[in-house]
Image 1 (cartoon, one colour):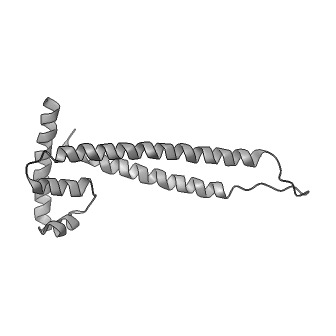
Image 2 (image 1 turned 45 degrees about the vertical axis):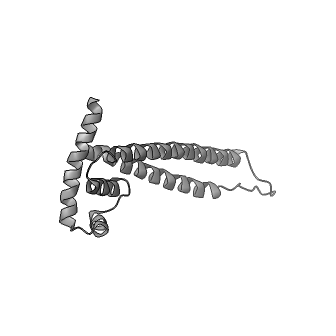
Image 3 (image 1 turned 90 degrees about the horizontal axis):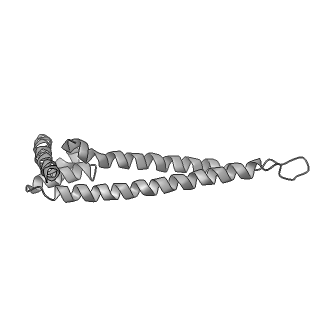
Amino acid sequence: MRAKEYLSQVRFLDERITCKLADAARLQDMATRITPILREDGVSGGGGVPDRLADAVAKIVDLKVEINRDIDRLVDKKRDIAAKLGKLTDRRYYAVLSRRYLLFETFEKISCEMNYSWRHVCSLHGQALEAFQKVLDAEKDA
């Protein structure tokens, strides 16, 4: 796996969690709108509504369990990547890659934070990816 692809796994997991959180919120909103249908005599009708509500709650619970598993994977992946980034000898490479792939900062923000031009940060990013690829290759060979 190439360095950029390896580092991008964090963003992919983060986006998946964000989508699932939005889906859980949507399901929860829908579940709060499930109401019993009243018959003419004022008694709630049929067993369909409690079943629909129970189904909705079960789906929400299942989705939240999935989200928690994904969050665990995200935390583990971030730790793994941070440990591998720690093996870079140039602190600038560590700063650029960790800000870009762990904090999801833009090159513009990174350049402001590091007091470098945007072009220089892009150049450092390329060099840092090459150095990180060597770290990945060394671990694969070990």
